[in-house]
Image (cartoon, rainbow, N blue to C red; front, side, top):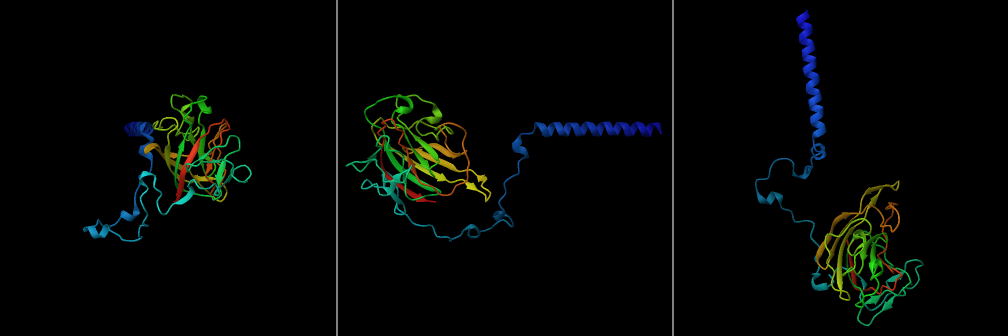
Length: 273
């Protein structure tokens, strides 16, 4: 009987020791090891044995023209071609846009007349625009050639003359304002044209107004990738944390920073995604 009790006690000690070791190993595992592995149900079943089994011919891919060298593809929506500001209004009160229309096919911020935004609202888009800061260098920091482009009227990609002009990096040119630092500095010299090509996927909200999927921004500055599928953590606030109030489609907005920034824009178009 004594031996039976002794064996039972030893067994329990060994069992508890193994359980503790197992728990310690679980704690040491990387969080990635415990995440669910991604699988694709459409690739389940018997392995294909001919190339034809993994080929399909529908849906047909829509045909469009090239967007190389600043050319607009034929399925794009023109937002500004240099001839008129009819597609834009003053953001604060929806009155006629008051920015300067120039003879070279561009428009320039009219200081303290307010931000302007598109009359049309958009969700997820591909956006192309060209911008330049003034050739004459004035002021410094955030007060030199400051503007910005807002997706859904809420999420800002910063425009700023940062040539020999330091500022906080999450507010420099190409940043997603106060959220994501650009991956590279790709600006042209002051007074020369820059391009932004932006892919924006709008956030999604449930019926109760809670955010169920973050929006994302990918930005190419003069052909250089500077934001790579960056998560929008909410609105891009000057003061305070990002906000995540539910919203649908919204306008594309261009900023009047109110410091005589004289930023100019041209050749603006979008493709709805």
